Image 1 (tube, rainbow, N blue to C red):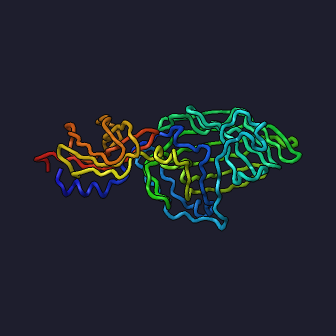
Image 2: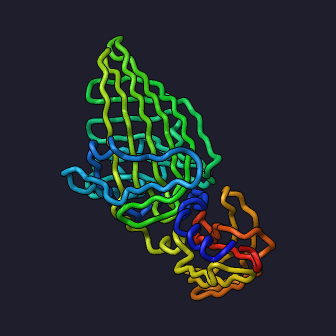
Length: 351
C-alpha cells in the first residue's frame, strides 16, 4: 500500500476501528463523588442522529441545546443514617441533590462487583420501591451483555398506592466514539427498553420507555441520556422526549487515577513498517494489554505489557506479519479503561 493511500485512509476512516470498552464496578460512582448534568431541549433531541447498531459508530453531541433550567448536581452519599434508610436496608449508595437536607429526594442503590442495582426512590411525598431489584448493569458489561428481567414496582404518592409490573431489556447495542462538550471518547451505547403497567381505580396505565445511554470509561455516569416515552393513561396517549448530558464530575482523589491510568499516549512512526514505539504516562504501576484490531473489529494481535512504572514509559513493539493496511492499536488498563490510536502498517515493495 502506498503512503498516499495509507494517509488517505487515515483521514477517511477515523471511526472504523474504535475499541469496544468494558464497564466494571470501578467505572461507577462511589461515596464522595458528585456529578453535574444539564437537561436537553426536546426539539434538539427530536433531530438527534442516534446512529445504528454495531461497531464503528461516530456520535456527534458536541453542541447539545440545553433547556432554560439550571444544571443539576447529584451527590453520592452513604445511605446509612439517611431519612429513609430503613426502607432500603440493602442499599450501600444513595444519590441526592442535597445531602444536607434530610427530606430531599434520595435514589437508593446497591453497587457490587457483580451488578449495579436501583432499589427505589423516596422523598417526603413519593415512595417507590423495586421488588427485583432493578438491575441497570452487570459486570463486566460489554458489547455482548444483555439483561432481561421482570420485577414488581411498589408506588406510593400521597394517598395513592399500587403495585405494578416492570419488564425491562437492557443490552449494549453499539460502540464507537462519542463527542460531547467534554471531548471525544471511546463509547459503548446501552439501550434500555422498559414497560411499566399498573391499574388505578380499575383503569390501566402503561408507560413505555426507550432509553439510550452513552457510557465511556472516563466518566462515572453516561455522558448523554436519551429517553423516548409513550404513556397510555386511562385511555389517553402521550409522547415525550427528555434527556440530559454530563457537564462535569468530581470524584474522590483516590479514584482519579483509577478512572484513567494511561495518559498522553504517543505512537510512532506512523505509518510503520516493522517496529513501533509507544510512549505514555502511567498514573500507577500495573499490567497493560496491547491489542491490534483489523478493519472488521477483529483482534489480530495481543501483547501483554508488564514492565511498567508510574510516570513516563517507553515500549518498543516488533509487529507481527500482518497485511498492509489500517489497524486500531488499543491499550487496555485496569478497571476496564482503554486508550486507542489508529496506525497504518506498510510493507516494503507494496504499492
